[in-house]
Length: 456
Image 1 (tube, helix red, strand yellow):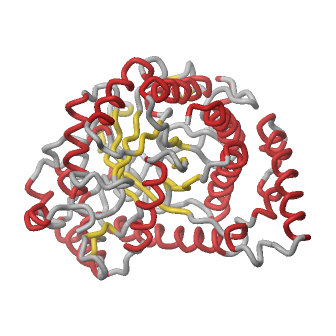
Image 2 (tube, helix red, strand yellow; image 1 turned 135 degrees about the horizontal axis):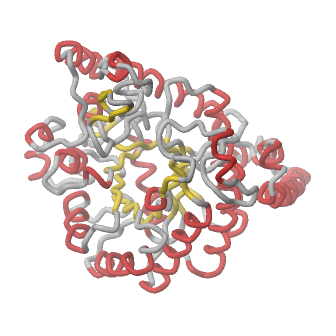
Image 3 (cartoon, helix red, strand yellow; image 1 turned 60 degrees about the horizontal axis):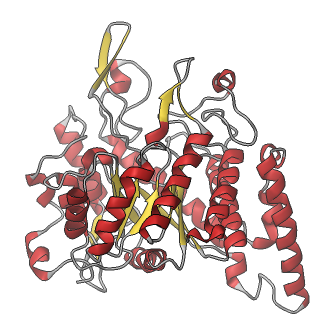
């Protein structure tokens, strides 16, 4: 087997997680309807294919070795109501960021979306109270609705099937865009929408787009065009989400007909959250047995023993590209707390991909009561992440971001300055604040500069 020893394979099945404590699982009032939905899910075609997951593992092995960079980005919590235009615009921002990173550094960028499955959200409390009324917390559209009525907050198992169908439709659209010409490098100017083009980052991007366009024209004059060179016209784009609802993930787990491995076919890559990474918990138990590339969030409370044990459990064979550790320390803690983890993992010989999530450790409540993040804090954590790797002589493998292509005002700062007074104008997130298109492209330039300055 590719990722598990034969003894582990004998002990593990897609159902063994049920013998462990599973945190962050909703209460389904109608057990029969829940079982019927899971049975139907088990009979549906896979959303992604085992060969694509193996391919992503190979790409991530290059990231672990310092030969590529991972850009993992997308919505904090996807909505069932997301339009095709919004999906396209999210993809466009990720493509723009990848172009900036590749152009400035010459390093291939592995593109992984938080998309086509990021429907569930962990919560700090099972309930919330508004005006004296206590109801179940909103756990994402795969479970219940964000509206605050008893009916809307009741967990509905039919939403599991809706999530599958929405993910399938989103994947279909992404494949059409990434393989059907939208990602053609000859279109780099057309990716720049007005609100991005009007920002300082957008103007810098326009300059790059002009240079790329001239290079493409030169190659075309030499007889090399996007019609003859597929890599100029198409991009490989992979999906990922937090594997939070384990019964949903189990229902979409299939045998790989080529290798015999179990593969979670809900996404190419799955990750374990900071709240569910317990070594004796159900999430670690489930994901240790699937052959997908895995991620695990690592926050400021993680010890070297915790991280080494996770590496041994999730990647005992030390397969390069199998395990990505996504650090979310906070801007003020990353420089001090990350280096010991980097050194311990390197000394133990684990070939992990190290990725920075600069979003979750830097959330605060603004004066108007809305959750937000400041662009400068996000940038500070990324800079600290690179500094920690420079100290440990390890590879800063990538960034993990919550963003949207929509012109929202949810995070403060950035080149097109968003002030606290602006938050209310276009604050649209269902959960956490996201970078908008302008801020995302701005961050890509800052990350590219860190990479180019010899820290990779």
